[in-house]
Length: 322
Ligand code: PBG
Ligand code: ZN
Image (cartoon, rainbow, N blue to C red):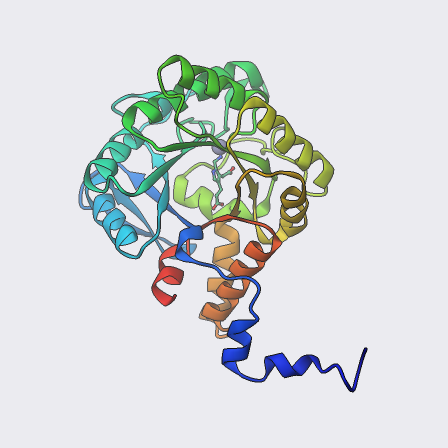
């Protein structure tokens, strides 16, 4: 059967019909809101390249967490930015460190809010790499040990989920091992498994002061043209014990998300990264597109491609508009 008996426009005629036949919806339940925490008190400084995004000190972070929960968003992911950095990223697993204090404060004030922590060294190292540097390279196995200690310190501080974003080989297994050995067998690992070496992280590196001082991350993050390799990363992380897998960035890698959806039964997360957010805001500011609609379209595309969870800097705006 085809035209004229078939008319696709029949079901598009009115908003009720469109609502009834809508295949994909973004809901509050899908959202994870990223937050940056810095030293000090009373701090709420805007990030120039990310309009509407702020860096909070622990005290103002707690207010922010309440707002997030009041909007019905189930989870936040926290990034710590320490005052002092060194070669081994000592602040990353310091029990009194910025992220550990932030987790304790947020969980203390908002026990219902799921607190995910980003596990990486790049915010804590003076060279800005995601692991330990030996000569010109990032040493895998020594880095894994530091990352596992970092994840454990987050769990001890009260994190509900740990999310390693470093892309070292074997880090998921190592994290699982130290968590289990310390009585944290119930803490899930959300692995940034398909994390590409992307230009879209630019604004984040300003916000987190984590740009590498030399070189780049191509020797550990996935090369953008490689989808099969990304799926292999995801498979390996599942074998190592990951409970959830992430694709990052989101919109430029929807094909990877769709392939992952077909292949894996675990919850899939997609990270709409800083550059994706900044692009939309920059264009909207110039009046070149309708920012709210463009954002909604990007997020529903990410969901349609197969994401269960979406990490997005727009989470509060979106939740408020739903
Ligand atoms: C740290 C980390 C990065 C992001 C999340 N965790 C940056 C990077 O790898 O350089 C990027 C998030 C964003 O751009 O919004 N490893
Ligand atoms: Zn990193």
